[in-house]
Image (cartoon, rainbow, N blue to C red; front, side):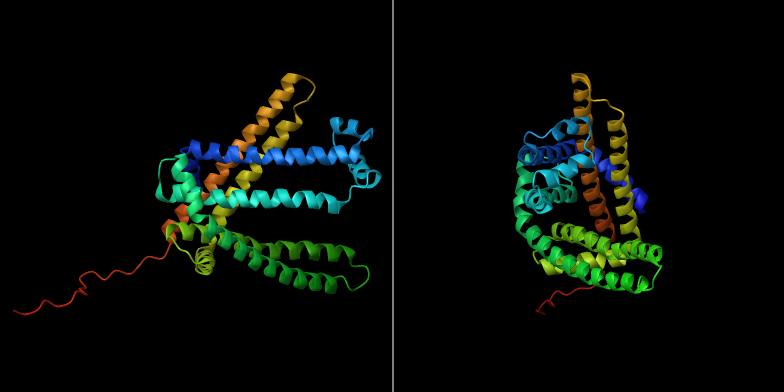
Length: 305
C-alpha cells in the first residue's frame, strides 16, 4: 500500500474506535487539571496585585511577559522547574497508554477497559526501557549534530559582512539535521510496534528492528509520518483561525470557545490513534516474513519394521 492508502485506512480505523479516542481524550483532560493548577499558582505568585493582570483578559502581550519576568522576579528557571513535572507526567501517561493502544490496534480487538489496561500494564515496563534507550540515543545524536552544525555556522560566518549568509546557513543546517532526528523518532515508534506485534522483550533488539524497518521503508514511512503531521498541523491551524474569530465577551461565546477547545482535543486524540493505526498497518505489511520451504520434511524417519 502507498502512504496515502495507509493514511485513509488509519483514519477509518480511528473513526471506528470511538471508545479508544474518548479514553485518550479523557487522559488529556485529566492532565489539564495539574497544568491549570500550576498555571494559576504561577500567575498568582507572579502578578499579585499588579495591574498587568487586567491585560491578560485583553490578550497576553509582550508587556505582560516582561512584567512576569522582571517586575515579579519570575525567572525562566522557575518556569522550567514547573514545566519539568508536567512534561514527565505527560511522558509517563503517554508511555503507559501506548501499550493498550498498540495492542488493541494490532490484534483488532473490541475496545474494553479491562483488556486495554491489562495490555497497558503488560507493556509498561518494556516501553519505559525502550523510551529511556531512545532518549539516550536521541540525546547523543542531538549533541553530535549541534556540535557539527555549530562548527559549520561559525565557519560560514567567520568572514565580516556575512550575517545574512550565517543566518541562511543556520536555517539550512537546522533543516538538514532535523531529518535524522525525525528518523530516530520514527524508529522509536516502530520499535514499540515491533514489541507488540512480535511480543519482544529486549529493548535493544526492538530499537534495532525499528531502525532497520525505517531504513528499509524510509520513503513510505516518511510519507505516512508527514501526512499525519500535516493533518495535525491543519487541525491546529483551523482551531486557531476559529478561535481568533470568537469574541469572548459573553457567557455564550465563552461556552462556544470551550466546546471548540474540547472538539480540537477530541480531534487530536483521533489523529493520535490514526498515527498508531497507520504505523501498525505499515509494519504488518512490510515486516520481514519467515522463509517457508514447502515440501521439506524435518521429521525423523520412521523406523523400518
